[in-house]
Image 1 (tube, rainbow, N blue to C red):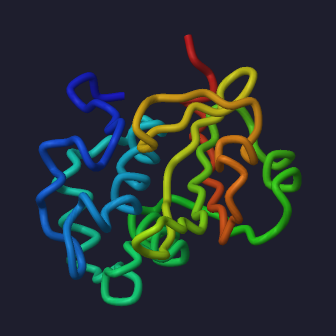
Image 2: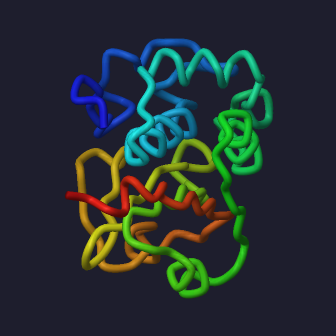
Length: 171
């Protein structure tokens, strides 16, 4: 991992919050971009957030013109453009978890219903011993299962990104 790149704990409290994405900005619509940034960071292929954001803008990867952020299938498309294989799942939580190895990343897309709007929240979950490390939910948190990582919200989709061999064989 590039030592200069840090996880983004909360898209609402970052210097990148006001950068435009879709019809809004990273604050309101950037969770998919943040999830992709974390996925690359966890895989040891980190890119500065601004580069990931620029790539997503260039490919026009927003969903519903950006009002819902980024669609799961567009995140998969972005990873494919970078030469990273990813698998889109719509099945049960346990089926997804069974296919995951240590250091895999799963991007969760969950329905997000708040008092002022409906939408989708995307975030990366990094598999570690004993559970999942999750970012972009206000703080770094650790959960034993993906279902708990999703805070029991209804899941729209999950994208599994396998860890490269050099990351699995940590020294």
